[in-house]
Length: 398
Image (cartoon, rainbow, N blue to C red; front, side, top):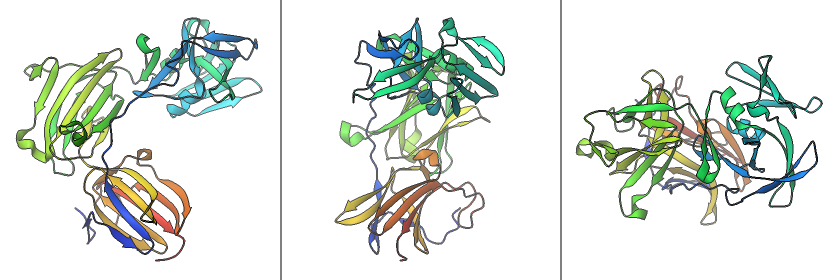
């Protein structure tokens, strides 16, 4: 229950020199590509021998997304080697480089790992461990398409995925290594009608999985709006009695309640396994996807989403644009030189909802910041209420 006294539906509002826009966002489909996939070979220089050699390039996907590094992955001795800094950064694993000993150290899940250049052994919590096929880390130098020489530390990706308890799949057609959480099985789907702002679909899984998602605007393709979610490295096990046609499991929605029309679930690939969920909508809805460890479900919650916060010039006026998937409800407040906009019942899809401040220094706007507000001890909102807060710091008080 909202404790604030005023909730305003989406309109244009002028605050002195600022026009605040809350816009309905229509995300387009996502396409993926790799900048190295078109090359049959790439040339790199080995840091130890100083010899240039051609290697077969390797593309990399993590959690279903292509990873773009300034140096390509390569095949050495039948093993895929990748720039370790780019991989650990993408996996949010901190690391340290010791130039004197030529060692790279990282820790995760209770394991401390030390790898040394040109040493085919690593240590895991002090235990000496032979790397896959004895392929040692090495420093390789690559000449980028801009002509810049880039030196990176290369390590076997199989060792990294194993030590981090992840799964590595080889997709031969595109020479791609796909890194995901361990394979799980999706066994059921349950529609949970709560209220319009937070109704959910729970997908029963044997463990947490990675996912990617995108939205298809029906007006652009001549059909209904769709949310498409790909559960990565997930085996589909359709329950008995389910409605299935050509391998597609269909869940009808009674009376199109809460703006939903139909849900389709199918296995779209087997290497690695990919389970696709397509949610057809009668009304445009935002969504939030998360894992519930208590119920062991990947949950799709239908809630308005904030997809963009930016500064644009509209009608020669500096404008803060807040892009949402649905028509937003919001509160506006002014504290000193800061204009605060709270988008009610919304999920911030930028920076995983973590606070982020961006310098603007344009016109009357100094900075903008945004975050998924913690409402557990809020004086304005009930605990558990989903609120996106956008703060606009001005150079002068309003």
